[in-house]
View 1 (cartoon, rainbow, N blue to C red):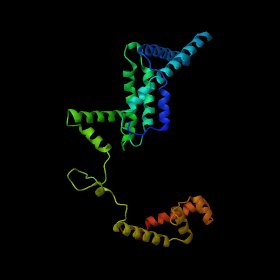
View 2 (cartoon, helix red, strand yellow):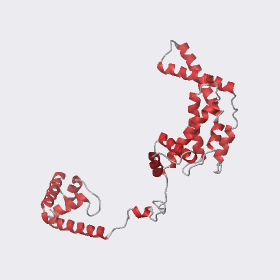
View 3 (cartoon, rainbow, N blue to C red):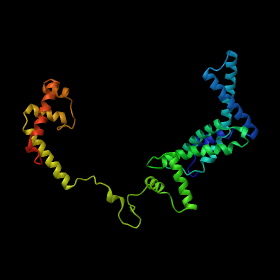
View 4 (cartoon, one colour):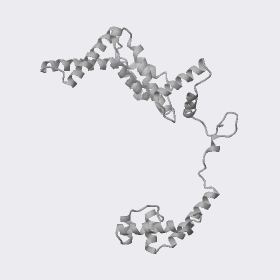
Length: 284
């Protein structure tokens, strides 16, 4: 872990160090209690009990399962930290984020673990912890979000390409290119001088833009000049030509002193006249 350890993380590490590790017999016993506790909860939720006594027995079994799950998780929090410390931390995340996400994977692993199958929990839990951390890193490592399974396939092909195969599938090459960060100063194609700045649209007005804007303003003023003063005022308010704020017909009516319906009809008639005025559009 290259990042500095924060005071809160130091307290967390000290706290989880107080919980004893489990041996294999403990794991089998606790996983059995968790399994029975979950079964008891399902029966209670389904109302699958005969009388109050059976309900109370189910409640006791469920509580034992919850306590067993809590102990199982607390005893394996150090496993999460040891795994999280092996990952490079993306700039948008912290080691605490990786640990928190790993703890979610740990809880899921504890729920699914079956000690009767004979293997140790550390082997089983590591898979789920890594999966949770990898998913978090995948979500924050790219500018473009891609599905977790696709990202896993991409990561696998990148790893294999470095070791056994120089080629990747065309789809993975495309996804890798889309998700890889690139500098605007860097060349678009290796060996060429043209960079990404060459294809970005400029925010500055071109001479053509200025001429078009001037022409549009001239046409608007000429069109408004053909209207009656009150109609011209209503059209200006409707399209926000003076202050940039488009107003409703009710607001226009209140300003001009007419009903909203009268304002609507006046503006509609003015627009119809403009559409029929060929002098405003020489191309027609």
